[in-house]
Length: 492
Ligand code: NAD
View 1 (cartoon, rainbow, N blue to C red):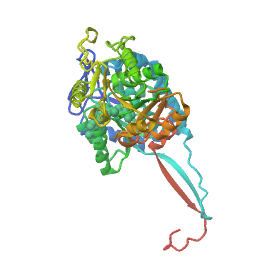
View 2: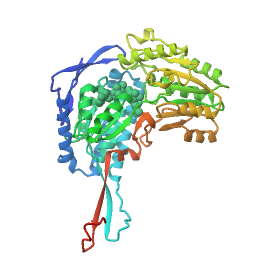
View 3: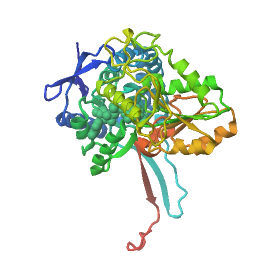
């Protein structure tokens, strides 16, 4: 059993209440760690520390080049400890070690990229219409930023907030998911070692209802960068409106993969498998609706099921495993209940549809990769996010119908297009109402590429140069050099 502590004002501390809660390994279904159960009192301490660091601390005196240097150092330390961070995430979250090794090896790129960008944020001199004025803009850090993160990719999704926020000069209070706090706390050791001064980055652990709500209503926090479910995002937006906090919301999805008759079928099969069964379907970008042209529907489905059936389930630490457990027990129950719902709606399970009762899955929360055919887009299984290994297959007869079905959802996070016709690829990229459109690939992300949602999938963008502007305020500066102050009762 491992005992973790929170990280507040540069110190490792227990919750004010002295209470803890348990974290469970999804592969063994056994408790492996105790995490401090924080409440509003701990949030107050963390916000005070972050405020002081922002307003008057050593951090506030650093220039942007020095901040960038710290970020790059942090990237190097993450690379050094990649193995440890990856295996911590596997134990706490059930993600595959093979995926985590790649992910943690790639995460430093965000710190290098935003470290490099830190001292390239430039204001502008405006060619103002008033002859006796000189005007320019400055981009200043928004202040204290709270990062609230989900359980599915804790380190990566925290990085997408941490790197641009620190590059901008903000300080941070982080609340990881109550299901997966461990990797975030391990990262704080490296924050400390890299030399970030006390209070710049703080972590409070606990539940959404107490820690999360205390954060979203706190008057000392200027911005919330949230990734999580739609309902929590809506609640946070309501609570944050009391103090007009700036908000970035990265929410859920019901992304469509469109397979046209001219697609390379073997590649499309692999791309659709990756979109829905990689990470056990627990990704916001899961391609959970397969839209396939009626002329290739049967052939595609046969090949798809043939490949999907070979997916190896089991110990996420084993490099050969391809599908790991569902991360949390409530999510395991929820996915099974949605499978039941789909059956009741008349969808036909052509593969899976039950818990994975296999020796290699031990006591873990495993669900068989599941494929429902004969789905109509107005069924709940086609409209609601499952966040698990469940694919809905829908036929279309022409391109217009494909775009119309793909866009007929409350979400707009991502879409996949499989075609060998470049004109069709450009048209689809334009017609699909989603923050990311992948053509002949899926699930690709980069520190250079903006990521975020249309519609109920959220607001704001993470990654890419524009992400840093979500952590900055624009200040307009006016200098008058006329000798006489003109009529004070008339607008200038
Ligand atoms: P969740 O919304 O239940 O929890 C996310 C975080 O919000 C947790 O830290 C939780 O404690 C906190 N929280 C919950 N209620 C809160 C409240 N009232 N006030 C403040 N904080 C609160 O989501 P989850 O189950 O951890 O993650 C799965 C969801 O995240 C899915 O819907 C998925 O699509 C979404 N997601 C989106 C992206 C993206 O980039 N768009 C990426 C990954 C996951």
